[in-house]
Length: 196
Image (tube, rainbow, N blue to C red; front, top):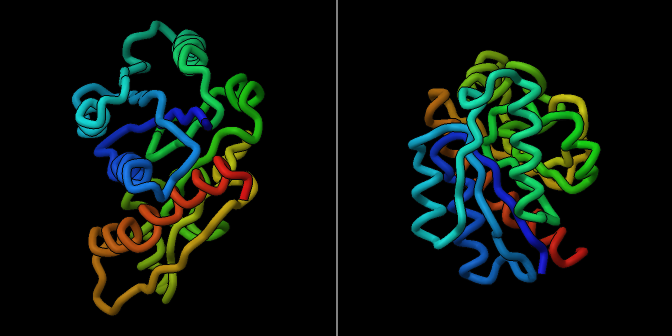
C-alpha cells in the first residue's frame, strides 16, 4: 500500500479528486495518510476531515525564520512516513533538504503544458492569464516529479485542454481543472502505486 501525503494551500479541489478516486477504485494500492496545509481555515482541511484523513497546518507564520519553518515542515512530513508526497496546489517553495530526502517521491500538478507558462511566478490564475495573453489554442495540465528547479522535474503525464474564444482566465482555469488536473493527478498516483 503506497502511503500518500497530500500538501495543499487552498480549496483542495485536486485533493478532493484524489479522495474520490481512492473511494471509486480509480486509484488502487494507495492510501492517503495525511494532509498538510500551510494555511489555516482553508477548504482543503475540511475536505480531509470529512474524508476521515488526518490533517494539520504547518504555517511559515508560526516560525521565527524560514529555516525553522523548513525544519518544522520536514519533521511533520517525516511523521507521516510517506512513500509519495503529492503537491496539490501547495504554494510554498519545498525545502531542498526535503527534495533530497524524498528524491523522485514528490510530484506536483501544474496548470499548463510544461514547458509553457511555468517556473517562478506562474501559479493560480497567472498561468491562465499568460496563456490567454499569448493567444495559445491549447493549454492543459502537467504532473511532474519535483526537483530543485521550479516546474523543471521529469514529466509523468500531460493532458491538453482547448482554449475557447472569449475565455476569461477564471473560465479557463475551471476547464483545465475539470478536464485535465482532476483526471491526470489521480491517474499519475495510480500509475506510481501500481508501477505502471
